[in-house]
Amino acid sequence: MTVWGFVRKDGTAHAVYYAGLMTGHSQPTVRLTLSIGDWGTTDDEGKNAKLRRWVFMEARPTSDRYEIMVREPEESQYFKKPILGTPMTRIEALGNPALDEFFAVADFVALNDPAVKSYLCGQQVSSVGRKGFAS
Image (cartoon, rainbow, N blue to C red; front, side):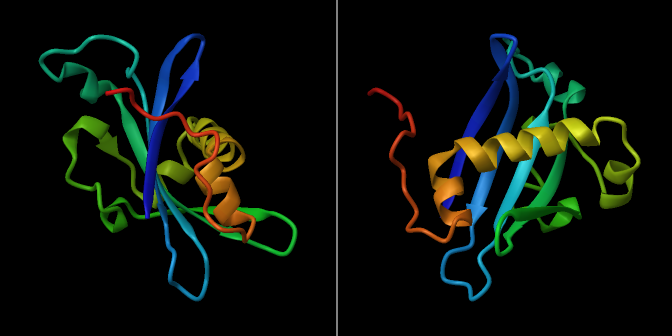
């Protein structure tokens, strides 16, 4: 099951995420593809993607919290999506000053996206509180 969304900062889109909830696995995990960069402006020609960086992370619940680790971008099902920007390898991400921001966004998603939060807490996946699109 995949949920996706964006995170706002200073009134504009700051990050986009895809969260794969690995339901049906014996070990619950959430696989996060997080892209941070110039999401909040109009970009008719795709130039803003060059300003974005993204990482692939995995969140696993523990007895009283969750842990997040950086994985290799090729493991993400969104690896060949140029709109996300430039992927960072695990080694690149761990040495990048923006890593704290990626972890902050991952924490925000884990604590504020109802589907991700409910899944990491060992509950039935809930969409209560998610905002959908009006048709």
